[in-house]
Image (cartoon, rainbow, N blue to C red; front, top):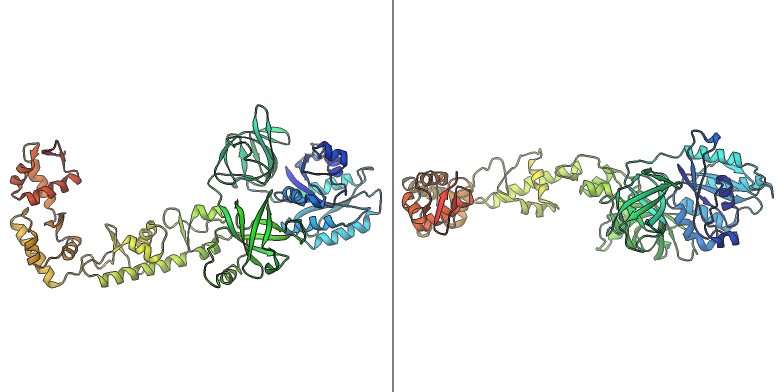
Length: 594
């Protein structure tokens, strides 16, 4: 299926034309048919005909042409990739013809067909030439055209052929894309519940799928699907769809709301955009942003000549490259087209920040460019980048974190320099804590520090017990006097392995807590409790002694077997408990495991 929206001045025959093309009535309300004036969106489609073999069916979103209903027109044309532009031969170009064309251009629509209606009432030639010239100056460019009359059927066949040719040239949307279904209607069907309709631009809807509402607070399940009044199990964009959903509170869904693939969209209340057609500094501060079927009040803050920051009244599921329209309430100014550049814009707090931000955005095109986006951000999670609408250009460096290669290499050099600086400043404790490294480098996740330490660099880093070391600094740089004191303790423990020196002895040797910590880090001593140090391997030796004892045993029995004091035995047994070597049987006794 291909979907087109009508566009053109009021009373130029848009509804009559699609009625003739489809055989369906686009005006849904009695008042519309009585007054001959379209007041709301209408939805009709072609039926298969013998000559349509191999052709896709065409669906039309019929929009009102009256100036009071421009917002409704925007809701109809916003999600649609092509237009059927209508101008009457007997009236020619009119004010709403111009405004509708400006809106189509602002949205960046590139596919369309011109129909000059009422060719039975006036020569369509001059109007056709004028309209084609005006349209050619917009995003639509040169479009095919046909002069038609719904009274005589003149040109209807030609128009139908041009519509099918134009529809066939439309790009095929990605069936695997994330769903963003802007809603244009919502109603209740007895026995079925809430039904919503909209134009599915890309992606696939399936019965049983779960979607989330645009505010991210409510999940719904698809109970049923219809496309062109036919029940379906699956519908791929582009398509007009009616979706029976379950789980939405009453009144939560309606025109301007949106249903999304869960977890795949960012909701942005602030976005930096490029404006076209109007200098940024001349835009009123308060505008209405029309995107999809939504019309949301926004505050405009100029950044540069053609860039502004929009702050919306409610978060919107925007992506880089989205096209939208800024329109002043009341329509006193020409609608302004915007292209979304950034949906995760940095805060502007310093003097001159807006000007600096404009310079940063100067080379941003609005076309999703993973390499350029990663270069600007340095580090970002892959799901977040993809939720911005930007493909990941490189594999993750750690977990789901992406990093710009140049930025990653610079971080690696900085990390090495910080480890070297810490080692030089703290010879007794040369290992830089990984958390401290994270803060120094301004990284959002500790895992990135580990990834940097393990990545190729000028000098490899060694990670141990949450600290980072230079490869040639496997032991703390103990001064000779400290090394001599440690060696004295080691010799004493060699004679009595479980007779740990007391605080007085350690102090007399000059072994402060810091020096002891450095000796433990170097593997020269084993710390089993506060102020209690033994030789490395003493824990395994103690386990061997305890296993040879009758099980279970008391603290006193263990103390005697190990030839030590209660001061040492208590923390040593607790140390063995934490390592699963021993376990308590009751309040007094322990036993060896295994």
